[in-house]
Image (cartoon, rainbow, N blue to C red; front, side, top):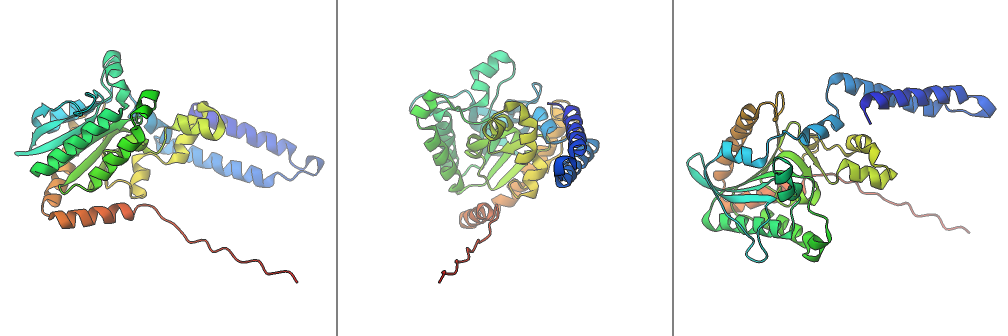
Length: 322
């Protein structure tokens, strides 16, 4: 559903309610005021520029650079490592050793592929259990030799098929998160496209989390959310706005540490966007390398324990009736 169509439908709803107002004793003034306010907000958002659904479409743009493009730009002498040492290799996860600013790092990157054939080969970026097992293998390798770890996130979510469930995909995601938050080496994660659900968090629990301006980060896809809430995937644009999945929202909520500007967009100017990303990675890496492992772990725990908010709800006891 386009934004123009949404605005038009809101205006039509308001007109219908106004026509019915006061008929047969009806008082619809509150509903009319609520819809009028919603319409004004949507018009304001539309005039300001991109809304949340626009960001979803940009994050999924077919020409958006793949993680391999960023690896090639950011690092030298990349040497890929394959396999999980149990089942096989998952082509949706790139990983290996690389040189970054004259030091060795571990790179772990989700890949959607490029053209239709490559996308099918990488399962459209949806990792299976062996992919997360491979990621853990690379994390442990980095910790063993004291190499910082850089992860690039771009996935709609972990593969939800029967095969993945049989191989304990949920357990592997949990173990990957547990491994990452326990590492005694600096870790930096960057969301470069889609950051979908636990499939993204599995390699995203880093000391510093960056997010490209037009990327998204969410517990569920807008289509999945709309199907659950309204049994209508066509309302995905509405779900996108409710999910607060944009980089701006993620930074406001404390989920990410920095939003990397894209200018015209990563699909229009990879060199500029990758350069902006490189500047931030370099600065954070220098900062983190100055910390000993004990301080690094303590700060990481504090970071993730402070995300989110809660309030105590005290239930008043009912007075006993005489």
